[in-house]
Length: 406
Ligand SMILES: Cc1cc2nc3c(=O)[nH]c(=O)nc-3n(C[C@H](O)[C@H](O)[C@H](O)COP(=O)(O)O)c2cc1C
Image (tube, rainbow, N blue to C red; front, side, top):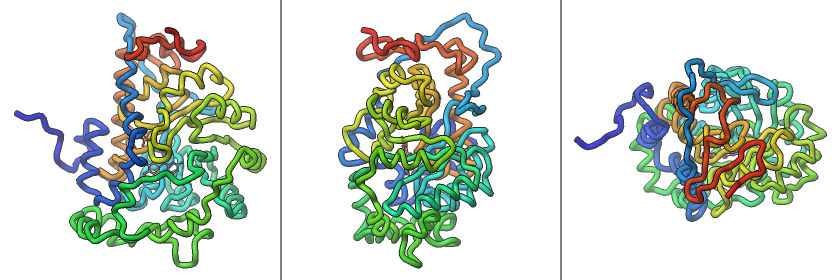
């Protein structure tokens, strides 16, 4: 009999993130799916983010008692249940109604932080009120600084623990497959309009009862009555700020008293500069292959950044993480934590809040299995000697070492 994945709708029967992905693919209309799934231009970086994991091999230790495994970590001095957290993704309301609240609630219940995007479809205060848990706020620093100041004050009042400035979109990435679905900005072409009508489960969850999702944190930046996510791209585009630079980081550092994180750093030089500016953490990231096509995978940069800066600031990364073993590989190479992007969205798209919880559960179970099979019982106890780059046969010394060893 031919191998076949589960074809139904019960997220409890999804065994992997890929199962959830295919369930979400069936449920969502093409335009919403393409927005989540696609990358920039030739999608070289999108593929590279996944392929890099095949090049890293695990070297297990055996005959170790692993009967008491624990997956918790310390992140910014506080307990986190697992070594991964939810990264920021915009327009979550297109995967399921109030996707931000549902994903944040799943994260809070699992005991991991959730990062809300600036371009979320539920307001930051409402997410805090309804989901609770550890919340981080992602910031796109648009031209209007009064708006930014207001948003930051709201985030502080609502109890957000960290502010995460995204710095890899000095210029908008070119996602051509996404653009092809639209006759003009904000207006689907006929083919996609018809295709959308063929997704009743999605229509009755997202569009019909509630109307097009709205961008809830940026209303002041949009013309009155134009907060619908559909019409927002042009006015928000005018707010885009290609002059963003390190002075803005200094400005934010003065303004925000809690943890400050920069997301979208991809070199030792920039990570070092972030530390010099008093930033508390970096997320090595190429925006999930959605910005600079051809950009290096964060996993490739990680060992260098760890060798230079481990202990000076919290080193996180994202891009292509779909398996517990992917996350463990990053930890073995010295990462403090991993952010997941699409993996959580696949859960949301497959089955709302229950699907998001299932995605977290799947990754946690996989991490537990991998950690045990490597012969370790805690995340802190992972041995950097348990990993090597397959293609070059190189071993990394890991967190305290100087990087690659030939
Ligand atoms: C649909 C989608 C929307 C995103 N929106 C944002 C955003 O609003 N802000 C941001 O900093 N990053 C955004 N990202 C990038 C993610 O935070 C993250 O870097 C990326 O998804 C990681 O790759 P992965 O999806 O392979 O896990 C988005 C990514 C996706 C897939």
